[in-house]
Length: 255
Ligand code: ADP
Image 1 (tube, protein in one colour):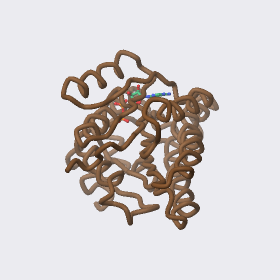
Image 2: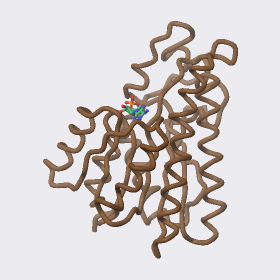
Image 3: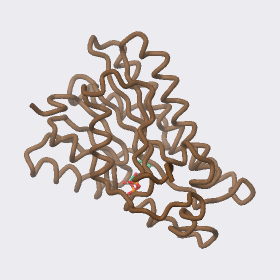
Image 4: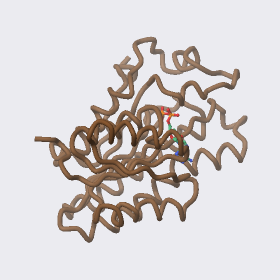
């Protein structure tokens, strides 16, 4: 039996990296996936991979820094598939390890918009819809080990990812007791994806900076590793898991 049979699922940032791996994995498990990204070519490629393999997916191009567009995206699931069972807020950007002194207002605004405001906007719409459904719904917000520790990202990134965990726990506490909506966070460690390739600033950057910050020099995870962890959290196997943060970091933060 597929673990997400007939579940209607939205995932943001599904054009690349762990979001793409998650979308593919969720579809393999029977989910009807509304796969969204700001990059049209990337999201079309994700959806093609899913549909070529016999899965169900629809491509959506949304920049999650646009509140109105996020609202349209969430309601599109109901238009396309009649309901919304699972929302995965995965789209995110790094901040090049800017400190509180070197982070500009522009960095702060952009990182907070995409990493924290967007999940807030998406959850607002999704929880409203899920509350009207007898079966409720499930939220998964992708945070980071930078959402739990202070030095595993720059100031804006760490603040945004801590915020995501707070938002998640608040949703769990508010709606979980009603048995309507489960909300959990995933905290990936170092993953081989583009977000790392996008870290270009020579001002403390890259693997060495991460190791210096976290004291970790172990293996990196893959998108598939994250997809497997995410799959558990959004599936009914985790029906009693609510308000949790699942750290998937190869042992980095246990170091
Ligand atoms: P990771 O998988 O490590 O999070 P990637 O850069 O590989 O990093 O993937 C992030 C995904 O999120 C990309 O597909 C990117 O296009 C998407 N993304 C980034 N910013 C936005 C945004 N503002 N709106 C929608 N998608 C975004």
